[in-house]
Image (tube, rainbow, N blue to C red; front, top):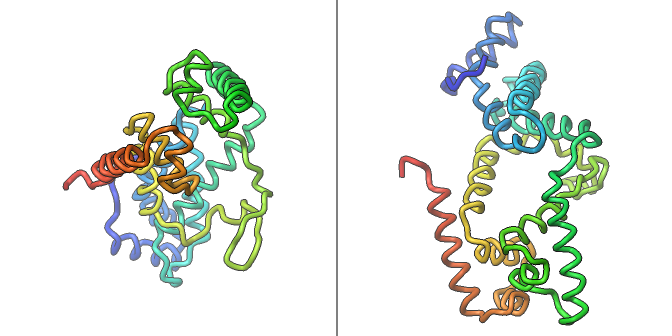
Length: 252
């Protein structure tokens, strides 16, 4: 049963040590129940992608129980920091296993096709990458729909066998799932960051995407979007300020 009750860190450590020493199911159940709030956060984060919240919650909760069996309290690692990435990894694996059955919404697929065709046409005519407003006019859709189409086109599945850079050289992406160094605080921050990006205007999102995801300078962003560098700077400042407000804890 889901619960929002969180165990104090000292109580968590005490129960972990007792369970490691005795293996009693009562200690295990109290530890799991005290950390189901993480499963709820993860299920909310990944819901709305063709899978029900309750199914995702069950997957994350089961991963929590399995991770508990592998946890060694003597290693000095925070339990939440250990189990959260394992739970996220299990949910991602669940999506991977269902990937053949899950299809993007038809509207998103149509937008992606429209935007891609408009982009190819404008590149040939203009000799440069088109702006969002130019794509909207060419495709006959709104700027928000252009961004939705671009997002749908870029949301391609990534193989877990894909090689990525690890601390000891290249490693499969699947090897990073469940890594202990990714803490629960990082997961919460990522969720807050996503929601703060959703609060931006289409122009602000585009500037932030180009500046911080494509690592373009303000001058390059200005050339890409067809506005002045001063406009880019002003838009970026406004976006960052709005994001900062969204990232502040509620009690502030």
